[in-house]
Amino acid sequence: MNEYLCHDFKTPRNDTSRRLPSSFRAIPVIFYVALIGSAYVMTMDYFNYKRALKQKVDAEERQGLSESQRDSFKNEKSDLESEAMKAEKVAEWMEGARNIQPIAVKIARAVQTETRITQVALERSEQVPANIALTIHLNGSKVSTELAAIESSLGQLLYRSYSPQQTKNGDVVEYHSTLVRQTE
Image 1 (cartoon, rainbow, N blue to C red):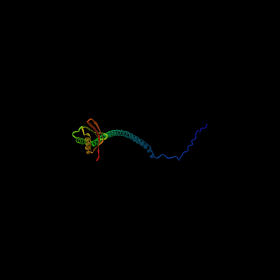
Image 2 (image 1 turned 135 degrees about the vertical axis):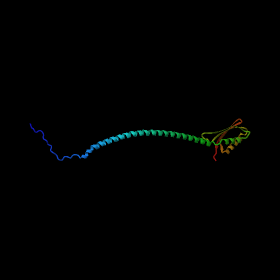
Image 3 (image 1 turned 120 degrees about the vertical axis):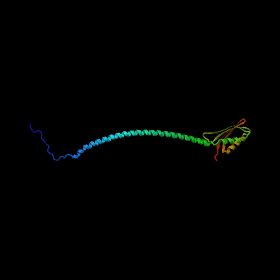
Image 4 (image 1 turned 90 degrees about the vertical axis):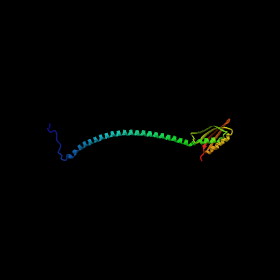
């Protein structure tokens, strides 16, 4: 057997690189400082996230409260608008209801003493409040002249008869008409 088993083929090398500069020793320190800094930032982000969630819940509660207030204000506004609409209709009704008393007085003055008025009805419709439905029951001998006198006296108040109808039941004459206000 041979006593020479292994040969060392390594030769000394002079072209190997030098050691790293000593300033590179700061790299692990910078790494650990960056690791600690990122852990701090992540922790602060977590706490800020929790605070933002709480602020979001508070904002949603405030939004719900303001929406409920807005809805109540809308309901109140619609109630007020409906009341205003009703008041406006009443005002239109009152505007259309010119004073009825002069009409009754003119009718009473137009009738002679020998003719009796047994019933006078002045009614207004809701659809056309300016028009007045007139119903008169007269007893007497000269009813036709009395009706002409009533129509002429109502003409002085700027009312004209629309679709007058007369029915005679014995001595009683029923006169139905719609009084329409004439514009000047």
